[in-house]
Image (cartoon, rainbow, N blue to C red; front, top):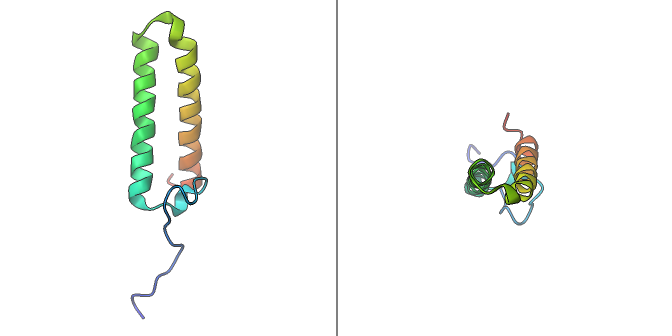
Length: 78
């Protein structure tokens, strides 16, 4: 009928963490917002904080960006 489901079913983020294209929309949004928050927080720490912690923050920022790009790539958003 017209209400038949076509395509893959959406799952919770923790059930398929490496396949963001199958995540429920709200889980994808929350994960994306959390990562953007981490990126902004890290950027503020790097450019507004003490010089001793910059290496640690830059490493964390790089890892966060890498994960975000991986999720965007796997979800085929762009």
